[in-house]
Image (cartoon, rainbow over all chains, first blue to last red; front, side, top):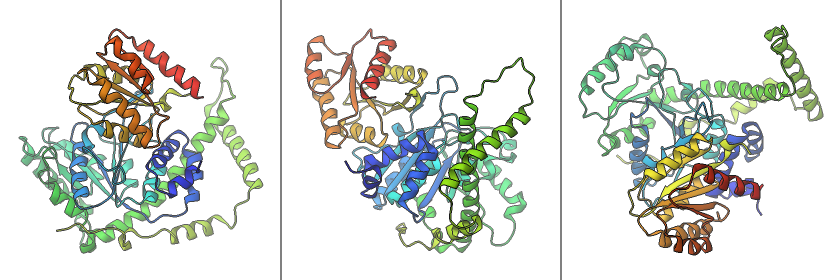
Length: 349
Length: 134
């Protein structure tokens, strides 16, 4: 039996699927195992987010149609919410996006449950995305759960964020709020033949025209597209725009800057996740008695001390080479730049 | 095993649009803590097997009320085998005459659930299979 790592290097679909499961079930163990695959050139990643029922999955199907016609290989991860009561989930995104008689080497779709994670994605998402990059997809699409206003984690994981909106979801005050509306790199007014599409368009234009951060020279300002994803209207224009950044210096600079911020956040999240697991392990053997007066902060300090002591012992057994600044500097130098990549095909115009 | 980590694909194969049962089962399993992927209606046997592999499920549940189960159910088993995924457990349900059940069991369908089956019985089946493979 070849190992999972070998099968991944041979680009076996089943191995990729199993590796993603491992990332979901054991995020830290998987991150350690798959780091043996070595560094990988980042692939072009697009995130789709927006309220439930706005048409994110249907839009992905329309984008897949375009990608297949152009011979691009696409990996999709679609996240749906887990139940706060049973922990289970009904994952229904594939239902809308799977093309009939698809080639599983060219189109890979994976549905994930958020498993209680609150940012609109799932706990193993970082590793899962990097597995898709290793597999070598030309394009990676990430669909969040149907979001409300504050689930913005997707902006730290992808190159461009598409916020998918539909007419008739509220008045212009909704467009003025913070959060979701601020993370868009592109706005999409889907179901654009419905009444209210014009009003939504003018609300978005007003919002963009008044935000100070978009007024400076040479700043990327979100564009607004209109689509009717169910029959593909407006989708080819969107698809071409997604692949036109080589000709657009503003967008190119924007993507580069974003990539730097993203790396910082991913490291930060990874540290938090690791600590979350260590802490849960450290707390397991402790029974807290509610009758006994205790100070949560004081107990937390003791748990942190214990976790650090255990990890120090583990690290002393396998010492890291060099100091942390050297390690990080060398990590960022070997991290290639998406806009200088040759592997990304150009969309036909 | 953590139930959340048990993934189940519920699929409708062939030209049968009666999906009340498939949707009910999907929800019932969700409410019992499983992760369920529902394919929607009118899927080919090939597409169901490919989806099962990409979704890395432990079980595929096929629902059919049109009478084509003897043709379609074994094809899903066969296709999974071709894809190197013979370990994925296939079960079926729907309007299936008692006389057809032995044929389906011989052709790799691990269990067949007919009208009147309770969700408890189905969960018992899942638990038994998981214990066997542990």
